Length: 421
Picture 1 (cartoon, rainbow, N blue to C red):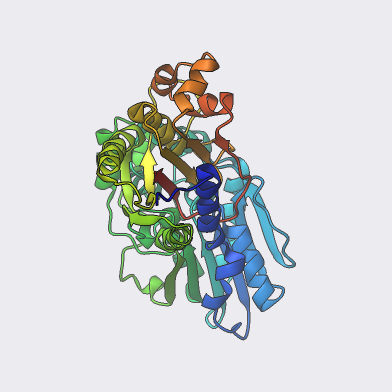
Picture 2: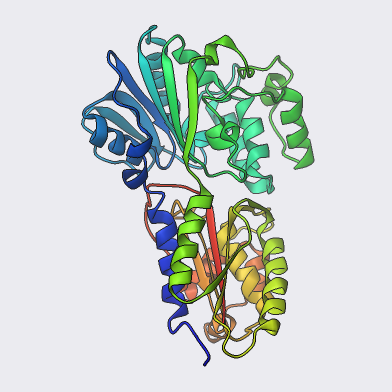
């Protein structure tokens, strides 16, 4: 008897919802909090999930003193912790001013005080303290150029650290001699805490030469002030620095946990599940082409009566800007995948960012099926042209195949699911 998923799109959306749900700080953070320490306790943080993390802290500890910076639209109600909304992915003056106040707050701490740092993806843009001699406008230009370059997130963050007075352990150094616990949600392939939000609480061993190499490799032009800053001794705090001796860093939520939860749901729906990895990187359209070839080869081996096959993966893909359209790595992956599959029957896929924002658009990602290209043709849309122009969001909006969640209040990177029937 042949088994089948009767509503593939509903299953794919349910898998994504489950991946997001298990990473919700209100469900997962409290188990990693110690009892509230005596004395002065200050909560600081930044990232797309940081306000939700702060909300979870106050649910467990009660009213707290502190300051957290999150993306516009991502604020949550807190009783004592101040929540500031600022721009992401390109920083703005609100983030600049809030970061200055956060550093001042950390510098006010004394021995015996305790600081809880809440760090999640997005903190790199939201914590804004340009290195000496660099203006906010210049920092914004470099950030925008990095985002368009196609450089992997860890390489981008290497540059960001060396153009900052808060990243690369510098936030933790400002809080010394207070004790610090940093709780993190990972949005980086490999879960290296040094690259989550550019590691504001982690010692950093990279050098300005490493940052210059990234700019050269991805052909990112920078103003003279940035070149000058990268010719100076590093401002990041090296590993082993005494000012980091009172810091404990804990990643309490990561992509692997979300993929595992989605896999469990997929098996409960009758699917055979294969995990392709939680740390995939690369150009979105190239990864899509490789996975399309893999999918078609797997489909050719399926026999009547085999259960549906579900392929799950995470990580962070990139897009090198070639056109002037509106898109993001997840939508571009889906568009390239649809083109490569060319309407092959029985294959549906979803790719979404778990923070609800794919690229700079308020869209989580997209969903495709065997009829995607037919629907585009009926709407008079050229999918190959949309891909060439990096206009995947407009493409999927026109055929009603976007996934729009609004703020998810968490961030464990990209989520991709391909269902083969």
